Length: 102
Image (cartoon, rainbow, N blue to C red):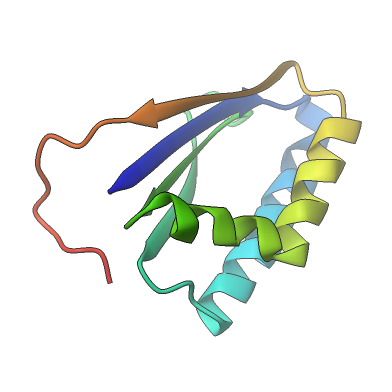
């Protein structure tokens, strides 16, 4: 299993746009799921810091997200927005889980 955590902070005026762009990505993934992947986005209590968790059965599955046009649009717009803190990616190492990847 591959798991990645990405965290970044956007400017206050970009929060709603970022949420809308994330929703577009998630709507596409709901309509056309990537088998073997679970992907979710959260905000911290400050409302401006976003955390994305992507879990996939392998790197090939993880890489399929790069093929989603809406995901690439989201990333481009985020970069262009001049985030307060740019995206920082971390690989997560699974210890145990109470669920199976679908």
